[in-house]
Amino acid sequence: MIDRLVRWARRRSPWVLSYNTGGCNGCDIEILDLFTPRYDVERLGIIKEASPRHADILVCTGPVTRQSRDRLLRIYEQIPEPKWVIAVGICACSGGIVSDSYNVVGGIDQVLPVSMYVPGCPARPEAVMDAIVRLTETI
Image (cartoon, rainbow, N blue to C red; front, side, top):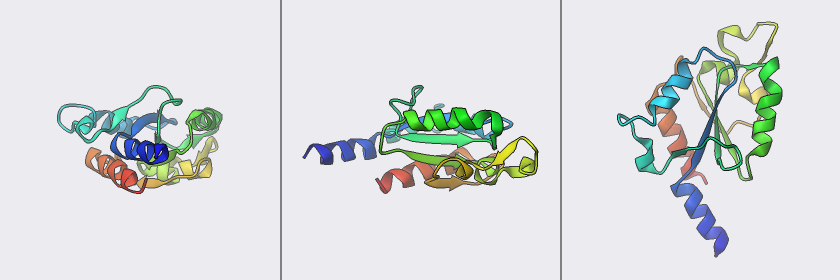
């Protein structure tokens, strides 16, 4: 009974943590747009969380650099189970135009298991919102 209640709460109110691994901030700005009155994702129960210890979904933007890889893994490990990862933007999906750089490891999937991909440069806020809603439907 308790497990069923917890699953219902997770589905109705996902807590999202956003992390930029070192991109141009284009996708990061689009994620921040979700929480403005224009898109108002809080009406769907989506809450932006500042602590990985309270988050359910990790939304990553930018390519994974050698410098950010360890930090990204540390943040992912701090998120309690069950946890999901969304890669937002072409840089997070595949490394983007800097994928051949000496300092870039690649996309987020080179380091973490990714649950959902949102391509685009930058990805539209509607696409990110749709990805979060579709991901919560699978919970």
